[in-house]
Amino acid sequence: MKVEMLSSLLPKSLDMSSVGSGKSHDAITPEDISVILSYSNLSQNQTDFLLMKYLDDSAALDRLFKHFNNKANKALQNIKNLDPKTPEKIVRCALLENIISACPFCQGVGYTTFNKVIEDCNHCNKGVFIYDDRTKCSIMDMKESEYKKITKEYAVISHMIYDLEQDSLSKIGDT
Image (cartoon, rainbow, N blue to C red):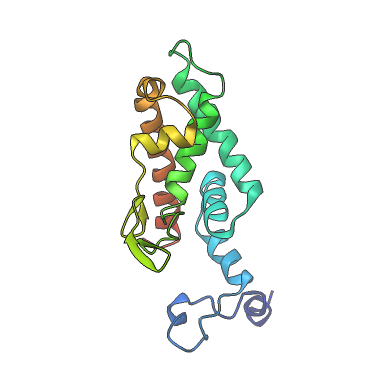
């Protein structure tokens, strides 16, 4: 193939250094995203994480949920008397913890207004939602005594999801 033909197949803004400098009007095309993802050598899980978190792709979320649900089932197999839905609850909560950082109660601003009164939000720290044990129990709809049985396994799954995000972002050059 001729070089001219090959160059016409690539998106025009392949050089990402111009993004945000006024030359490209901050426009990234879908083709640009495809090229970045294809050249970054992401695994399927890493691609799914990025698609799920940043593009709200429900199919990617389903694949990741199944992957981490299998991991949670293996991690919890030695713990007796657990609700069969516990692995699903762990994965759902861990995904939320790693995806949603802005407080859903104040929309990430750090304060609430009610009847013309501005108050600090009780659920977050300056807009960043606080995932403490009480909150996690509430999200997973389980008692604290049951949560204490699975705290270690929850931390492992949550850390795996966090590592997946960091590895994905480092491969595309965002960290």
